[in-house]
Length: 358
Ligand code: NAD
Ligand code: DAU
Image (cartoon, rainbow, N blue to C red; front, side, top):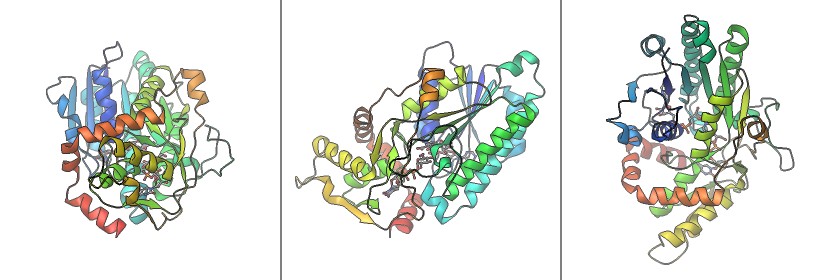
């Protein structure tokens, strides 16, 4: 077995941040090779990883996690010590309009990876078996929705997914759990709250708000804007995943959260105010003027909040960024990467915007 890591979905938002961070780090845990398996859906963007194109410790493989021959071939060829599974259909609104890809990638794809990993794992000697890890990156949405005064989700909360997206992620978590209990595949599951930061596709609230503000378009808020999310800067999520890989107990689940509960309207107001300072509108008015309240998301979860005390006490992780510092970095990043932003806004994305917001 080699010190190689297969990362699935590494051309997406969190996966590309993870690869860039891990290959940029100078510590003894840096792998010999990261193999990024991604089929490049609308959300996959190789431009995120442009800086690695001549890096001998990085390899890209275009393909789907549902392709069992390809996945088996990668295990055989690269003999990895770790698989980190980010690949997914990740946008709730898209899952409401058309759930087929969510079932295919999030459930069948995860099953395909588990089965290939199990077959590969069975070929390893005892020493290598002790080292191998399958880390499944999941979401807090599997726990459903909290009312205002309920305690944040901990790892013992029951699963109550409410959208096709969260139901597909919940299914994948159950498969991962079963492959640990039945086959002793050394798995780890992380359930994380809402991420934000560089390279996020502008269908999600924070980049959508920044893009639309700068393009002088309406900033759409669903319903009354009082839904609450627990925001985590993406680099903190990546550090948490690395810590769980090193110190996590096999078969366990770890919740990851930002300790930053905010209503959507608070988030959007804060972004508008920062943009007012950093890139004022030509007419001198606030970007807040562009906010438009629109029809609510069907089955919209009211509140997510994470109790990350297990991760803190057992692994020693806590977020480094406050929402204030993280959103400031994020807005600066988008302002400094206008070219990246303009490349993203391709035909398929425009089509989604027209269909969804018209
Ligand atoms: P993303 O949509 O930005 O990226 C997903 C990536 O997976 C893309 O590069 C896409 O091309 C790839 N992909 C999709 N289907 C594939 C397939 N069949 N085979 C291979 N590659 C495929 O997603 P993200 O926001 O980076 O999320 C990554 C993971 O983290 C997901 O599993 C998501 O459920 C989870 N998560 C996301 C958040 C968040 O706030 N974004 C929070 C918690 C957990
Ligand atoms: O909680 C973790 C999850 O966070 C991840 O598992 C998902 O992959 C990720 O997409 C995210 O899901 P959300 O549905 O919470 O994220 P989104 O950015 O789509 O929406 C955040 C909140 O903002 C939510 O309450 C809906 C609202 N919203 C979103 C959009 C796109 C709006 O008010 N207007 C919008 O146009």
